Each structure stands twice: as C-alpha cells, then as structure tokens.
Image 1 (tube, rainbow, N blue to C red):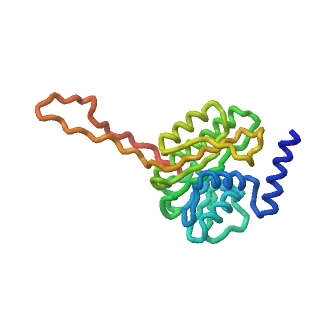
Image 2 (image 1 turned 180 degrees about the vertical axis):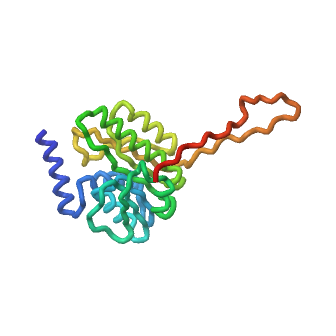
Image 3 (image 1 turned 45 degrees about the horizontal axis):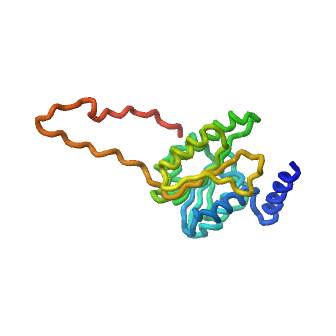
Length: 231
C-alpha cells in the first residue's frame, strides 16, 4: 500500500507543479504518446471533462487552430484557452445533435474520462461505468467523423469484454490499456480505438424476379418510432 500511495503522490505532485488540474492528465498523455490520437487542428469532444485536466492536454496538442468542447455535470473552473470551451450538461440528456452543434461539426476525436460516483460496490460501479461507455458509443454516429478516434474509461468487470467487442465492431482497431499513472489497485481501464468505420450501411435490397413467388417475410418492416430523448 505504501508504494501505491507513493505513486499517487508522484503524479499528484507533478500535476500541481506542471499546472494540470488533476493527475489524470498523465493518463491521456501516455495514451497520446502510445497512439497519437490527437493532432494539431483536430476538433475534440471531451465527455465528462471536469475538473479539466484532459481539456488542458487536448487543448495543448490541437493548438489554437483546433477546437475542444467539454461536457460535464460539474462546472469546470480552471482557466482555459479560447479554443477550449465547456458546457454544463448531462450526456444522457443532451442529444447527439446537441453535442454536434456545440462542437460545431463532427469531431476528429472523442475522449471520455467519465466515471460513476463510486459506492463501494465494485459490481454496481462496474455496471454504471458500462452504461456510460455505451452512451459514448451510442452518440458516435452523430458526433465522430469516419476515420476518427476514441478513448474512454471503463471499470473492469464481467461486461468489459462485451463493451470492448462492441467498440471493435465500430473501429478498425480497439484494445484496452491501463496507463502507468493509474494506481495498481484501481479497476480503471481505457479503451483505445482508431479509425472509426462510421454507421454501417444496410445491405442492398435485391429487386424481385418477375413472375417469381414473393417472400413477404423478407419485406422491409415499417420502422417503429423511437421515443424522443430529453433535451
């Protein structure tokens, strides 16, 4: 336990000395060093951005020609450059179109360090973390451009492999990573995904052969209207 606390103190002290809002900045910096998800001029959507350390890192990398939009239930109070903006909002209440309009267009990268408020129940915390990740995946078709990248935090548990497979189905590459700045006792894992494939297109409908019997079971069904999302 002493070594884990020492590690925690090391990154905490570095963050304070280097002007980052939290030690979590070094997690994104390591992800960036390994995968180069962020590049100058990129547009970035940061979901669950408070207290702002990932906004700081993303803003530094994309530069003034880029754009970073952060969303969180908690206001971000640190000083940020003009190309980094924040909005107080609930990712489950904001529609994907809301997020798209706030960014100003499809993002090149979506980043998420979101986590549920921990309760001391590892199983329950894991499932709530899964809900957050699946919400991120749900909004991607509207907010992430084809070819874009993603990184999001998830708590390890029995559903983690399923969420990883769901992410792999949407990207050319997706895998898990536990950055060095994550404490050994933490169940945090980050899913890193590159080259978003975009929304899959439905298979083409083959026109019927004249005179052939029709199979009505294959006829396209009228879509069932979905309930509106809260604004």
